[in-house]
Image (cartoon, rainbow, N blue to C red; front, side):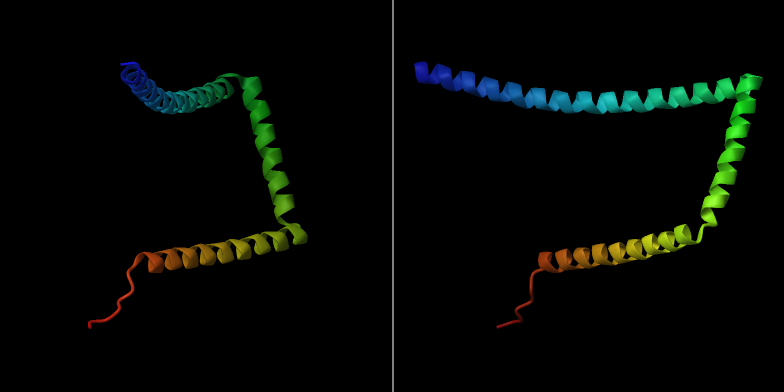
Length: 117
């Protein structure tokens, strides 16, 4: 009788852990969704404040102008241009390697045709 009770208790504990894990996963998804929604609300509030407050709008316009000027100057640097080209070349090589890996995995998944006997 003790073995039966212990086994029953163990089953209930394992089921409880499974339900808890599923609940934790659901909770995580809910929290992620809520966080995304709050971040969007913050963004919208900031944009509204910038549009409504003349001083904030002026500061924002100055920042955007400086950002544009900075980007233009940085983008004209010879070394940064060369580094950017190298990054793009590496990205192409990475894409080729990923394609090769996918092809190899697909060929492993397909059965080899032994021919008819």
